[in-house]
Image (cartoon, rainbow, N blue to C red; front, side):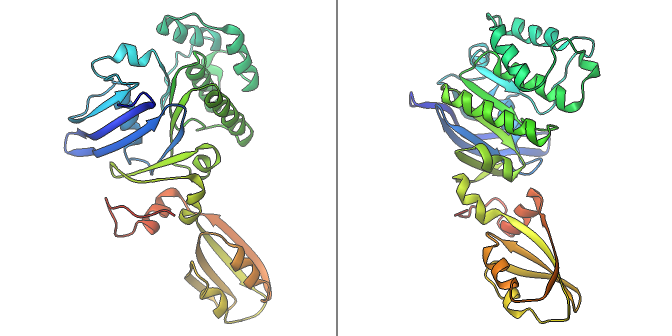
Length: 307
């Protein structure tokens, strides 16, 4: 394993009874990288992260975190990791400060409370509030702070912005970029394409327990699918629109209306529609599951080029 490598996984296999969660995962993350781990729910993201932490043991394959085996050297590995689980369980009777002190005690390290205060202020989290009185979003903030507060060498984050409003999501993105600038390696899972695109410098895509893509965020444009409902002021045969590259006619409810699915950029669609009497245009982003079904149709377990 190279000294420049933070995470190295080879042929990782993990099953839960008859269910094979990981079917041979291979992955390398360099030190200082900010990598997004993208995939539909149930794809194997959380299982991979828990294996890296030594919380669960795989049936086969090897893992190294900073050159250490997370199963045999779990204490040494976890000492260098800040971890945010997908479901963080907190003692409802504790205050926010009490919960953070508890996590600090678990790590057995001196905590820079000035830094903790900076984090809680930026996330608008009050230290004296009781956990049981917090909203889901504020509980998520507690999880983010406890992951960052030790200034770890590696951050493993499972759906880090779940439950946060858009403004807080942007603040978390800033915190992650600042951690990366300070030398922290960041590996975070998400099922939200726009989130990975916003902050990751590299993305790894998992589906059905297998890594099927590795790409730069700008290549995600080819995975973007949108659905448009277009209404015209009068009946027109929009042949030009339907024949555009990347455009698929999904439905035509009536002679004045069409529903299209668009893959990639929409610039040419908008320019073409300008020559038609459009009365209304509605768009929606498809879920990641729908994107995967459309983009990888018939390629289960296979590999395609995102770009």
